[in-house]
Length: 91
Image (cartoon, rainbow, N blue to C red):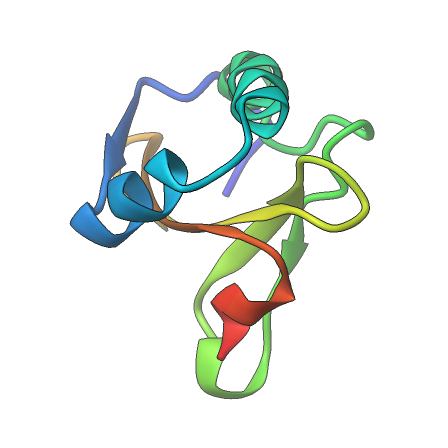
């Protein structure tokens, strides 16, 4: 995990399914945050952080105070977005 640009982002089926259920405004904000994330995954505006417990090995960043994107870093500056939503995504 470095501050280098992200080369590519893949999306899990669960992520895409959850994304479709979100309000339009949250989807718009998520797209804006994804652009920031691609340029610098640890930009201060994202509050990217490691998860613990059963989510050990995963990371998350903020879309809003209530909404997050859960992800894993892959080799070669690639990322897999696992889920998107409220804190329920950590369960």
